[in-house]
Structures are given as structure tokens and as C-alpha cells.
Image 1 (cartoon, one colour):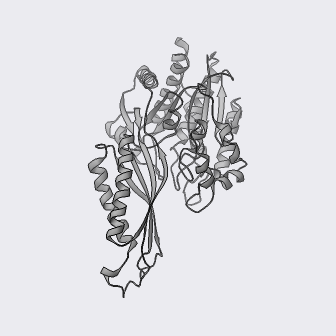
Image 2 (tube, rainbow, N blue to C red; image 1 turned 60 degrees about the horizontal axis):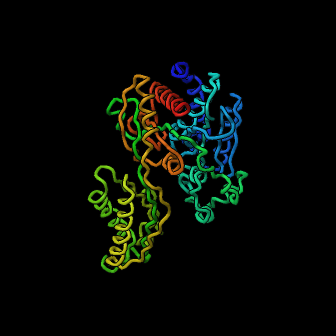
Image 3 (spheres, rainbow, N blue to C red; image 1 turned 90 degrees about the vertical axis):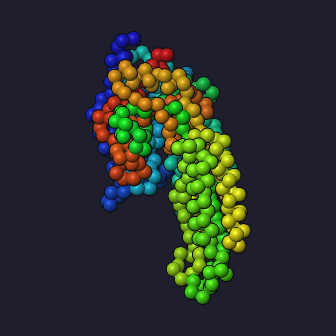
Length: 415
């Protein structure tokens, strides 16, 4: 057993992969955008499978658009690691990509080692994690948790249909159910990810062991008024949709702070559309995408219900129409205790300090956790920054994290 305990990743390969992938989908102005099923994403998919092939690993796509590569026994249960290679608009080079490329490097390291693995190991790139159409779509398909009605009606912010995007990339939406993996097929799942927050950097710690991942609710909140002349319509006679939206956003923040889990609840209005968008016309419609996060599913549901009650109250107060449209829901997830233990063992074996912590961001791991024991490893985010082009983690931290992943996988394989 001692031989696998000395195994380490090849950092030069991982570094080269991170640098190369970060250029795919980057505009001349420096913005990085790889959106699921669009040409830059498909270019990244082809590149990833080519890198697998160079290592003697056969890459394959499932009917939902996920990409996998496997080493060791080709049949039976596997230990899996991965994440996603799609990005948010103008995103960074590590969100998701670190997890996929580290998993690929683990696969190469296992293959190079010549170890006789007792189970297969699979690296996974789950499609459409970021939610251009449906968040965590790929992992939900693998877990058998994707609602085909949602797929049929899902559109991106520009009105493009998910089904059309899939067909354009060569995938048949009707075959999505075939992507579901049988119960027990994934023996364990472990994902490495940048923290996307400031805790590890401020604590000067290289590793976070994730204990739980927040639940997330997306809801579109729409206020409807009348488009009157801004100069001639008295303030008390207006039906100003923006007044209602602004009051709603301000008061919901207070409700979340007061009634959500202390220091663990979040609300964000990241997309706001105002019509008609003219300085001299009273806004007649404001649509806001509301995102509620909390480590407690009960709290997420409570805050969602409180929001609907508040929206009705404000609409009545300002004589507005109102729509409160549920979009999607990811359940909170506790990480598996045994997988957490293996990550801690690996971290201690590498003589690295760590901290147990929750994840305030959603990840594929929380979906996979519904059907397999799952865990997550965090590495520090420089300045706590993510979902922006200057997102970064220093190379030594990336190497430490990838070696923790490798040693965690080995412990799960030989457990």
C-alpha cells in the first residue's frame, strides 16, 4: 500500500492544461466566455477529449452532453471526480475548469503509476453547470434528477431555447434520460474547486474540507405598471414599476438578514430588466432574477414564501401588477462523512493545514450527492474573487489541492 501513498500529480501538465483551456473562448478584449453547447464550449470539449486521447484515455460524451474519461477497470463501480468547463459571461479561468483538469491529471497519474486499481476512476466534465439555461443540468441528468418539462421550456437570457442549442451541438434532447447512471455506479465522488470567497486566503490555509453546500432558489419577480410621461404625471398618480421593484429588493434584504440562517443566508438580484428604458417615461415593467441561498432548505423555502407575500403587498400598495415566477431549485446538501474523512486523511498525510467549512456556492457535487457519497476540496481564491476575469489561485495552492485530490481518490479506491 505504501507505493500509492507516495504518488503525486505532474504539476507541469496541470499548469499547461489550465493555461491552454483559459484561452479557449477568450475574446480579443480578454473576456472569457464558454457557454454550454456554443462553439467555444464545443471547442473546449474537443480539446479535452484530445488531451484524454494523448494519455491513452478514451473520452466519451453521454446523451446529455457530459464528457467522461475512465482509467482502471472499465466495468463496475467507479470513483469519480470532476466539475464543469462552461463559464459565466466574462468569467475566470479556474471556476469549474480546475476540477475537470485536476481530475484529468489524477487519471493520468493513476495510469502512469501502473497500479492495479480495484475500481475504475472517471474524470467528468458536467455540461451547463453555470445555468445559462438550467443550472447543474449535466449532473442532474446523470443523477436522474432533470425535469424534461423544464428542458423543453428552458431559454437563455436572449430567448434561445436549450433544445435548439443542444441540437446545434449534435445532441438529441429526447435522449437525455439515457444519461442517468444506474444506482451504485458511482462508488464515491470528490470535487476540487476554488473557494470563490475570502475565508481560506484570510486564514492563510491551503485547503478547505467542505461539510455542506447551500440550497439555491431562482425566482423571477416582475412588477407591472403604466408607461406615463415622466414630466406631466404627478408622483402620486404614477404606477411606477421601478418604485415597487426597488422597495421589494431593499425590504427582502432585511428579511433575509433577519430570518435566514445567521451568516449563511444570501439574496442577490443579478439580472434586472427595466422597460421601456427611457429617461422621460415612467417604467412600466421591471423584471428581476432573485437568487436566495441558505445552508438550510427550510430557510430557503421560508424566504421564498416571504418574498411572494412581500411582492403582493408592495404591488397592492403601489397599484401595480405582480408576477412571482419560480425558475429552479437546488437542494442544500451535506457532504458524505466518509468522503470528508478521506479528504482529511489525505490532507494530513501531505502535512497540510485545513479547515472544515460550508460552501456558499452551488456545485455539481450537491447534485451528485443525491445518488452517491460526495465530498469537496476547496483551495484559496486570490482576493476572494470569482465569476470575473481576474479570478485566480496561486500555482502552489493549485498543486497542493490537486495532490489532496489524488490522495483522496486513492483512499476512496482502496477503502
